[in-house]
Amino acid sequence: MAGRHISRLYCADALGAGQAVALGADAARHLASVLRLAVGDEVRLFDDVTGEWTAHIDAVSKRDVIVRVERQVSQRETVPDVWLCAAPIKRARYEWIAEKACELGAARLVPLLTARTGGVEAQQAKPERLKAHMIEAAAQCGRTALPELGDAVRLTQFLRDWPAERALIFCDEESAGKNGADAIETLKACPAPAAILIGPEGGFSDDERAAISAVAQARRISLGPRILRADTAAVAALALWQAAHEQR
Image 1 (cartoon, rainbow, N blue to C red):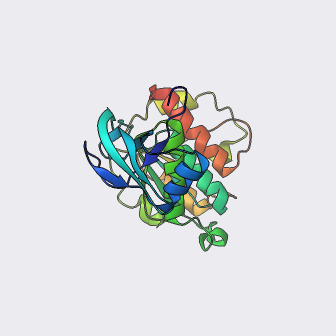
Image 2: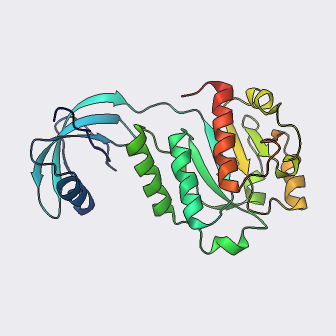
Image 3: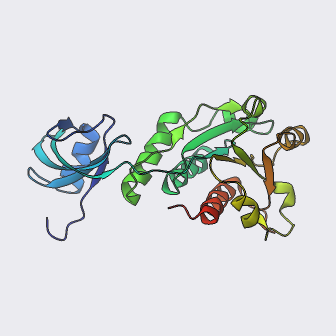
């Protein structure tokens, strides 16, 4: 195994030393046919519960790979309690948002249904697809924590009875042409727990903007002078929040 990249794989069940884990047909094809791994080779497993473990392959077939869990190399990482709450956009682009939410260490991803998401709601990315993209991102980027995936919810319901302790960071597309230099200072005043609110293509309606502004914990920020696509805005806002709070 000297010089070989060690594959990282997600396991849906909590891991423990000595445990035999069946990875399934997809993993079998990838490990045996693509990576050419064989009995005795090392892999790493993470489970979003206990952290990351070393394991060695016990058996390989066309339909399955059996690995034996050996030792824990790290506990599940601690991520800041920040939610990314983003309106659905085209399926592939929302799946990209899910990947980046995982890479950047968001605690939760919430799809928000708004007045202007009707055209994409019927085609929005399925939860299992979003989780698959999160898992792939975690495996590639060395992460041991996956964002919790919330159910799609209407914005009006989402804002109802907003928790007093959670800041609501409103990324205001109406401020796109204004000076965004104070965004970091505003974000510094919004530590975890926090939620970042990203609107749909076309932005929030006037009624929705009023409802957001009426939330006492809402803090409006500009992401700078340029108009950003929704997926770009989501990543930019989450990265800025983390920069403001020096989070890994």
